[in-house]
Image 1 (cartoon, one colour):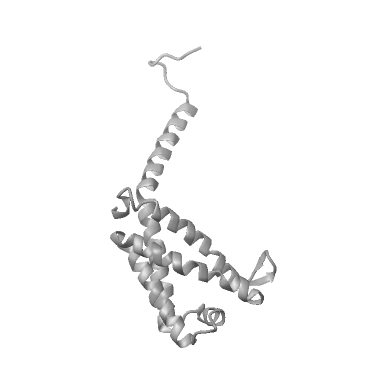
Image 2: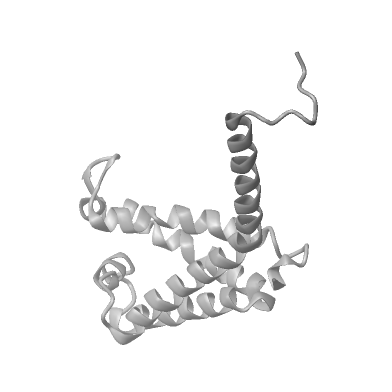
Length: 161
């Protein structure tokens, strides 16, 4: 039997409506802030990790040096650091998003090289057991997904939000 508009709603219906309103508000806020937050997070990670390489204090420096053994590490590791800082700055400044994503697309495949060239450093048990270094490399999948999201904003103008 249908309730009229004058009859009070039961407690569950009231709570459900309040929860639905809260859910809609939260989803709206996430929609508004997710891309800018992602942009800042990925940009900061690149600036930070790159700066560590430039300063010679990156825990990944030895891994990079072991992977790219054809170039002197005292040259290559800081150059990679500068590259990463530039990527981060480009991602933090929306008009440069495309440039940052291009530099990122050129850099990221190289981050997976140790999985092929240095399996003894990356795996405790191939192919599923990862060392800390392996986990550090696999987290780049999240960065790739984030880059795809940021790339999806460059044409619709939301890159400048």
